[in-house]
Image (cartoon, rainbow, N blue to C red; front, side, top):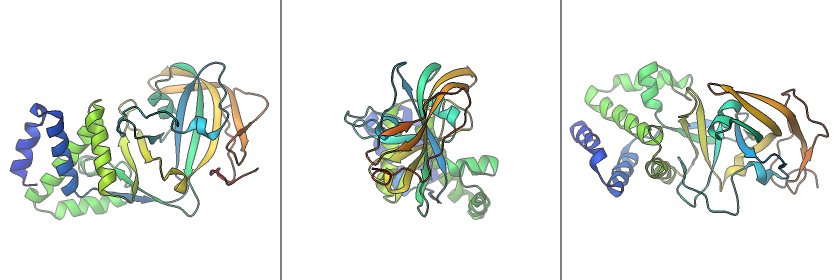
Length: 281
């Protein structure tokens, strides 16, 4: 978009009605060169869910997105349309679940061997321009930076400003009507993208993923699951106690739990990864 028009419309954005804001977001997504990265096998992300004191997760369905009830609107999903929210670290998963002192279910999910997914990281251009390195693009950051630097200013600035604006709509506030609309527009634009990555508002420097549920098990598997008592120490750091791990998963998805809990934080890794219908009868 022409920089003069772009700046004028961004500066007037707060005065628009919700429907007009969504139209503008959709317009920018449609013309913005949305960066997306290919991630191969082995990447592992986490999910946490608070439990009642007497609750013991019984199946894989107890540690994924909630089934059987309409999804509430979230940062990356419209009402009635679920995504699988994952965190790059255990403590972030607990923080995102608003855990203070609670029993929790903790699960780790990993991209399956010989599989790959495409992830769209929101604000990656902005991060590279400001720090020299993207959230997720690693060594590719230099190439992206060089490409931006070869563009004339009046071509590069609209791209960077648009990226900064879309990043702000995703994580700069808690108006899910805007952030979920943005996520939906990106998924609609790029059918091959199955996950959107964005920085956490609750944990500095941490990354969340919003993954499409309809194709989740095509590329991901369950690597571990635990039940534990989680205590928030301070500043997003947690301590686990009374940890009980899943030692196996039946083909039906039913968990097999170890017999005794422990205060050790060792994790029982499922090998191979559990994928629905792939393991013991």
